[in-house]
Length: 314
Figure 1 (spheres, rainbow, N blue to C red):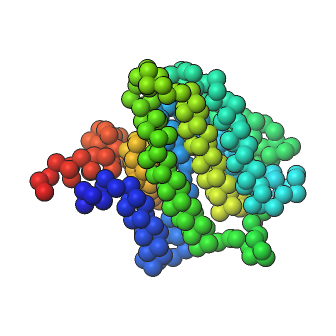
Figure 2: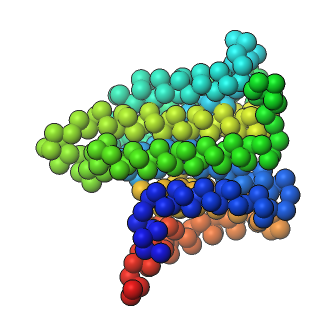
Figure 3: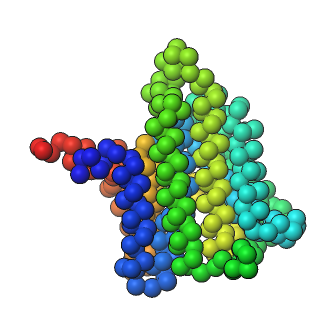
């Protein structure tokens, strides 16, 4: 068990096994859809965790990139005549470019100032989507054309379960390889101390920007997947509340933990479904559960459990 927790490649393998086995257990397409939502959110949280957990930079505006990816799927086919797969790539490119342009100045900030700057960026994207009603449909949202690949119409909960699940495994593998590379070691040194990293000759600005761009790409892809799964987009996909949810998922599961990103996403997606029995008190109960988790396990669920296992005698 200890070897499992300390080997990120074993963790990725375990995630792949779970993705492969779950369809044999889940009783209906509704549960397949919930699982797909977990995987889609986990992809976005993996990127955010790379930025916050490994590079030590705070972002409260990642829903902006999520929204760009989602609206690219709606706007690309309608206004540019692009197929859905090209719209997905286009949305990812726009998010990466925006992250590069915005990240260069705002990543010079630290702490609360960086959080407010990223919050402003995310809110700006949400305002553009909401106010440009002639293009985006405004608060009413837009329909999204279904993706068609070689005559195959990509639609349905089961289909998107497999697409999002396989994509999550690939995303986790990319993050594992990244954090175990010299780039990952540079990011961890920046997380510990930017001053010490500079003394060691690490280009702090470059690596922080790299983490920001990669996290934006992950969020954009997740947003595109959600748009294609739902067949509809609204400005809430770029809203402030979604940015907070992504941060809560990362913190709840455990910053700096790949498995924690998936666990945090699973809890925050599944719990609201399970708490519908409380009707109007659903959000109160959900908030109370999250507060209890954060008080009892301040380092996050996965790191706390891992620490307990390591303390146990062999």
